Length: 452
Ligand code: ADP
Image 1 (cartoon, protein in one colour):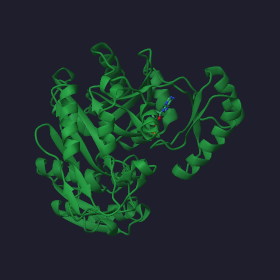
Image 2 (image 1 turned 60 degrees about the horizontal axis):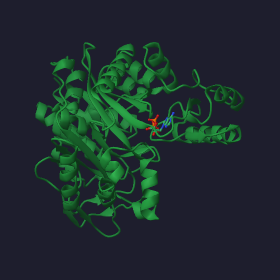
Image 3 (image 1 turned 180 degrees about the horizontal axis):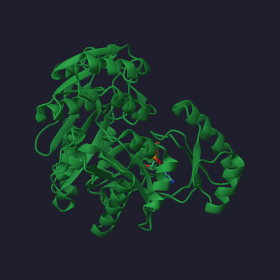
Image 4 (image 1 turned 45 degrees about the vertical axis):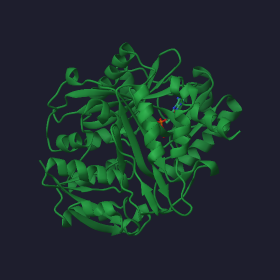
């Protein structure tokens, strides 16, 4: 096992990793930008190193500064968290060259899974159903028009290097495809410095179902069931739950097996998530693999009792899994509510600022993953997610009851501050959501009706 690891991230996930490391008896080094210099979680790490000014490009995304920090603090491995450098194959390669273990899959796997067109080819070859679409990158709008005609409208143009819902455009006919194609390309160029796009059939009103994977150092691969992440705004998740109200044991087994087959075919190691779309007919399609820990990993931890972040560290240190697929049992129902410092009444605009008054919920079935404290100032420079409320009950109705009272307990107050907890409560009160009858179009309709 490592003696000491460095965490190339910030906020709640940095704290999550500090905690996992400590429980394993591993020391942690936190890095921070000057915007995070006063963040209380830094004191929970064994050491903290300033790596630069607030802009991410000069701190959390600056590979040379992070590597230097690891070298001066004698860290043997780097945990990248999510976002920032977590799926950057170049970063993983630099770590390797410098003799530092990257806590994640091998560089070549990050590369092949990160390229969505290549990933779909691997999936197809492994017998995993993929969304009908182009064989790979589509170079011209003329080619796009021909392919769209073959697969049938509506279609979605997606950035090959995409992430976070960026570089995606839906088109329902040829004239709109022409616009969508150039818009997606331009957005991809700006967001990912890569303007390659591909085409998919647009699945109408699907559910987003993803499977958590763990693959040990020897390649033994198990899945830990699904998460339903269909509550999304602009392709970004807001609330996640496990198990999905839409799956029966048979479908759960089929999707789980497909996810494992894809991971085995791609030589996957460590923790990963295979994302699928599930349509109204119960057909599911591979979308992509996320080669990192996900924001919503705690719901899986609650229902399986398996610590995913500890396993990431153990696998990177060369360990094999000490359990098999048959040992994985899903117990109860868990839900995660993302608490973002945003104002849903004002187009979800971010509300950075100082927290004057804070009450965090607790009690049976409640887990709060957050780095915020009273007196903490939410910086303006980073993602607006400041906390995750995770609840775990014996079944979905009990999870609802715990969630409602926990959201009621939560208070985050300060000048100009707003957050998404009221909205989360309103979602729990919605009849369609409560009955399990929802898909990726749910939140948009809900917000529309809510404000009407
Ligand atoms: P990103 O990597 O940007 O998060 P994904 O490929 O994971 O992009 O897609 C994000 C979301 O976009 C999905 O959860 C789904 O809601 C929507 N989406 C993506 N592809 C399709 C498709 N072919 N049909 C319908 N919706 C899609």
